[in-house]
Structure formats: C-alpha cells, structure tokens
Image (cartoon, rainbow, N blue to C red; front, side, top):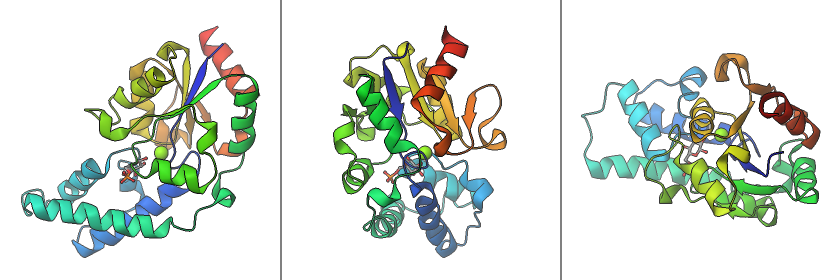
Length: 222
Ligand code: BG6
Ligand code: MG
C-alpha cells in the first residue's frame, strides 16, 4: 500500500489554475503577446519566472526586456493573481477533495503539498486545509521546478516517506512528468489530450476517492 499522497494545489485542490491563466492573460495582452488556453497548458505547474520566460519566448520578445523589467512583470502578474484569490474560502475546495483528505487522515496516510506556487500556504490557510497537511514542500527550496522531480522528492522527504511508496496528484503535464521521474505513481486530473495516455486519469476531482487511489495503486504496483 502507498504510505503518502503528494498533492499539487492549483487545478487539483481548487480552481486557481483559471486565476493564474487570467493573470497571465492580462500581462500578455499588455505586452502584445497572444496566449490562449491551449498555450496555457504549457504554463500549468511551471514556476512564475519560467512561465514568464515561456510567454516572452512565445511572443518572440526574449531579448526585449532588462532583468528589472522582467521582475517587474512577474510582480505585476502576481499582484493581479493575489488580488483575485483574496476571497477564497472552504467553498472553493474542489468536489471530492475534503472527503479524500479525511479518509487519508483516518487511514494514517501522510499528506504533503508539492505545489510550485509560493502562494500555496496562503491558499491552504484561506480554505481551512492547513492542518490536513503533514508538510509543505517549499518551491523556493528546490533548484529545479516541475517537470524536474525535485519538489516531489522534497515533499516525500519532509514526511519521511519513500518516494516509491507515494502517489502524486496533478493536473499539469509538467507535474505528471515530475511525479514519474521522481518515482512516485501519478494520478492525473484532466483529459487524455492534455495529460497523455498510460497513466491513471480522472476527468475531475469528484471522481477521486480513497477507494479509487487504492484500486489504481493495486493495478500498477501490486
Ligand atoms: C503552479 C501553477 O502551481 O504554480 C502555475 O500551476 C504557477 O500556473 C506556479 O505559475 C507558480 O505560482 P506562484 O503563485 O508562485 O506564482
Ligand atoms: Mg496544477
């Protein structure tokens, strides 16, 4: 059996993936770079700075701005985003997540957060979820962000779990690759088109349950 579940946050625990998109879209419009939801799939799970690099690259503007301007753009995006999540509460937790967290706790399965977002702890607090988490992996503490395995490895280490005995839940391509290369078992939230074939997938979080995780674990790891 698995001993721990490593959760992504944005797009798994709550709908913040959409708010990140709206904030990037506002900045991209200002910079005259066209982005759409298909392009946005590449930004999911990716750090703030790497996302901005991808957007500038997409618009052919990599060489256009100084380091100071780059950091100012990243700050503007974050200010827009932070403003949009101020009113988050327990009402914003995705369906199925709270019962899953409760069942994991009841069964002594450890829970850790492996989110690339520096706003993760704030959001957990707003949604009243902080106490469910045995550890939060700090994205600022790892050298490489997703799709590198570092953040998932750090999350497992912080709860003293063997990474091979962990499940990781993700809605982003970068996150699924990170979980796989760390050596944990990925569970995707989303579509085959976005996340690819050959992994356990649910179309939305209401389909996630402790029983489902056990079933998927037994299918692939037993
Ligand atoms: C990830 C999101 O969880 O966190 C990305 O999927 C986001 O869209 C990244 O860029 C970093 O978030 P933040 O809040 O630190 O800018
Ligand atoms: Mg995500």
